[in-house]
Amino acid sequence: MAVDAPRIVVEPPGPRAREVLERDERVIMQSFTRWYPLVVKRGYGAVVEDVDGNRYIDFNAGIAVLNVGHNHPRVVEAVKRQLERFLHYSLTDFYYEEAVSAAERLARSVPISGGAKTFFTNSGAESIEASIKVVRAFFRGTRPYIISFLGGFHGRTYGAMSASASKPVHRARFYPLVPGFIHAPYPDPYRCPFPGLEGEACGEAAVSYIEDYIFSKLVDPGEVAAFLFEPIQGEGGYVVPPDSFLPSLQKLARKHGILLIADEVQTGFARTGRMFAVEHWGVEPDVMALAKAMGGGLPLGAAVGRSEVMSLPRGSHANTFGGNPVALAAFNAVMDVIEGERLWERSQRLGEKALKILGEAAEELSIVGHVRGKGLMIGVELVRDENTREPHKEALAWVLDRSFKRGLLVIGAGVSAVRIAPPLTIEEELFDRGLEILVEVLREADRRFSQV
Image 1: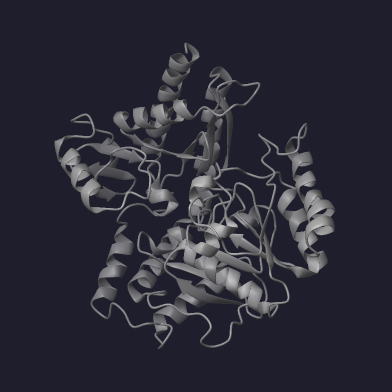
Image 2: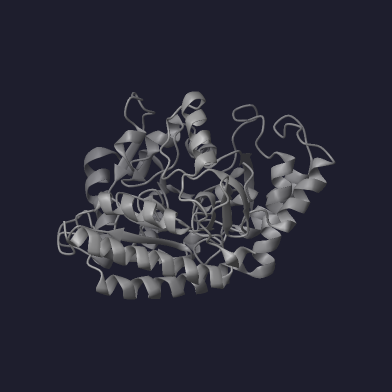
């Protein structure tokens, strides 16, 4: 059934979708931006069906959440079994084995040697907040600063928002922010913040900037608790750093006794062709912020770190719902699928295919400036001019809407990148058809906007 998608029986939004949109406007605070008027009725595998009967190939996976697809039978069955036992009993006040088993599984899975401990949360932003508190408390307040990166996005709660620097709209109206965050340039190989540099030279310059300018003119490294980074920037545009950057950043951190917080909320759990993205570069974080794909669609996150670092005193940090037993049951099933099917290998193989197809299309289309990614985390950068590399926001909006009307769900990242992040379990025939639609739409966009 899944490979029959897409099927557009009525141009979206159809009549039932429009009715839901009108109700939504009246009763839900419109503090978020919807990419297009999709009103979901159900999902299965890598297919989404809307309330009017249209079927779509899902290249979003619920924003990189559904790594094992919509309603995976093993996840659904695990949730049903747990529902018959108990739905909730706050982990921060009592005990249950499901949480201990899940933490043991995380400790075996993360690239942290010497033992790891976990604090369970409900979301990526909560995982970042916990990580911030952990690293500052580890130094007993003697290192109040955290260095994060321009273009990075870590969430919209106050600490996470203060660490972020992706778009001004995320921070506007909310000052004063949490103090103690310093933002360093992130080495985007395509649009390097250091004029005249590209590739590895851009990565080297980014690390040098921290040592030569931030540490010499702004803050002593002995006052810095941690570097907070996304191994691949997500909301910032699916930006893959130069290969030398993260190893060099780790070397700088170790030199000054600074901890590393890897925000793997979007990159984790086989998304990039490894279980975790830092493994591409042999980097070992001290703390990892996780969420999204953990719960198979249920709200679950975690801050996982070296045992000696995860040492907040009793009573200093807690929550009511973190480590919910139903979400943990889903997590265990998700891990069974990922490990049993070695989805990181499938992600890598399909990602290489997509990069080849999209890269070949980019050579003939002036509107496509750059194709980048690892595994099934791929960005297609749209530009007005190949030489100036000026972002093309209007083309992005058109491509997303046109793809939607053709039966493909894709969204944007950064200023003008198409974001590709389907379920890792997507049928290859369906994956190929989705790429075919996207390339066709990109060709239409190239003709349309080259005449403007």
